[in-house]
Amino acid sequence: MRLLLDTHILMWLVASDARLPPTLAAQLQAPENGLLVSAASAWELSIKFHLGRLPSAAPLLDDFSGIAARLGAGVLSITPAHAVQAGALDWGHRDPFDRVLVAQALAEGLRLVTLDGNIMSYPGAPILR
Image 1 (cartoon, rainbow, N blue to C red):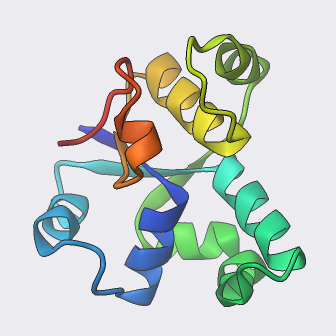
Image 2: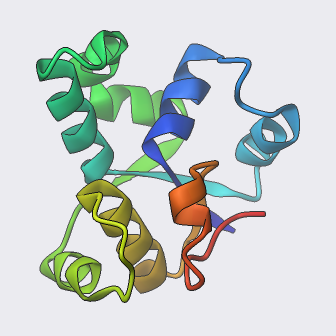
Image 3: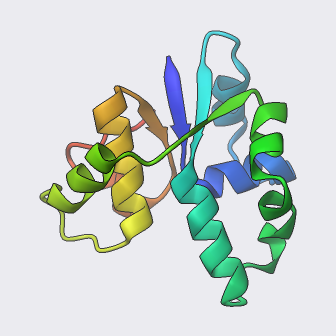
């Protein structure tokens, strides 16, 4: 199964954060699952870091692609189709990063790995459960 990591899941995985449930961590490490991280996560981390809201993002920003590679994850670019689909989602949630991640998961046939209640409440989101 191909899995797209939400930004907080990526951060928790990199930091070995206890908030990442062990059962979910095991699924991320299962060899049959392919991991992807979105360019949208790099964008989100950069904005939050430079606004002073997420100083812990510095190591990820210094080597986003390298860290993804060390995790065995590919980096998923944002295509025009992803952007158009993100805007067209029938969803009142206005976070552009969440919208892009959901659109990417839908467009690419991925399971989105998230514990974000806003994303999990979207009825069409292909969430890893």
